[in-house]
Image 1: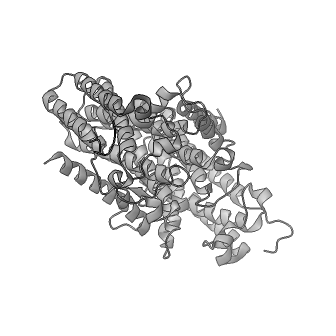
Image 2 (image 1 turned 135 degrees about the vertical axis):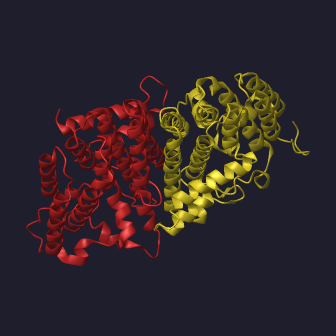
Image 3 (image 1 turned 90 degrees about the horizontal axis):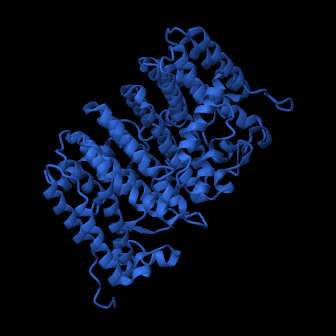
Length: 291
Length: 291
């Protein structure tokens, strides 16, 4: 089964479970859960997670699928909450109205909460295959998403006058990428610490690529409001290095990412995946833009 | 150690872990986590959870403490999110400004998210003592808090024109009480389904008691805005049965709760705890109030 198929199938199954199938559940919230996770876009984090799991042997596919799904559910939850009026107040996400506009603010808040909980539930349900691995995955997920070092902490730094920039970046974008590589390895029964660096470097590359896209593209091309970093005065690689410098930085980071891959049965295929991710990430500079 | 001490100690330890001790963490969010869980008030759900664990032998206290803590963290998270402007827009909780007023809306949203994640983390960290029990606890917690039947679902029903009242009450208040009894039993290695009824009945009693307090007391006595059910047109036992009828109903439910307790080593002490909870729940009708 192609990777994207496998990911979409696992995410759909998790959403169907949360929607309750034949159990009574509030229909709008049930519908909002699906709305928040579709269309999928690149599914970059679960793709990384499954690629690492495959590179490590993928001996318990149910566990790898659960890991990939949990990361994507949490990622979608964070997008729904970040888009709300008290944060980015965004109208558009993935080319359609954000959850709080399509449904309501209360339902957006509950959608995020429910997706966070569903992420942990997916991992706990996979425990039949291997309780110890499931616990490891749950611990990594909690560490990567909550306080003091997960994506919540990353968002929390944005409310501070004095930002610890290294902690901020590590938590805000890095945490879910290191979760993706670590959880991929852990799902396949491998020691996960060796995989932190690959995730960190992909996360760093993603941040630089996002800064570039934010600076170069308009709302139509982005599927979300443009120039948000500049508008909100957030630190940005393009303002620090210029467009050319940021693109060079992106290439360096991705070479480092490939070099950091631990020796494993599927090393070659994984290098290939990282290269493809790099191509996908590197933005095409629009013709009218000086670099 | 008295029960209340044990609970406060376990909750403080969990908050300290989430605050990051010597790791860099955003200070305001770290402070808001503590603000949201203190002062503790009655800690009724963790008290029920620990009481059931003790009645079942409490053979792994670390596991019982984790169960009690996880339930209280999730309960506090739900209060923080429910108080936000897009839900109840409450100014006061436990006699002090709500988190979004004391800190900010973004930090309130993140506080709730972080506490939800911390609840799952606490259970996963206790897995050293017994991975299988930890997984059972995580599954019960997810079921009781997320979709389709947990407290998120309960809140979700409030956005519907046509409410399934039985599903609504079961999810909105019942879910965390059945979680408390089931998780107390599961933490002590007992089969947890037999404990669902006790939790359900305590939850029902709590709902009736809350309806009574909401109708009888003013904001000063409640520590939160009064008459909210009437103002928001929510279903309420007092409007259905009158004050006297609602008090009689409360007594009936609690007798049923005591009768439902499964046979266990600490049965007598547990009956005593339920009776004390009943006394604490039954409101004193103010002198000026006709019943």
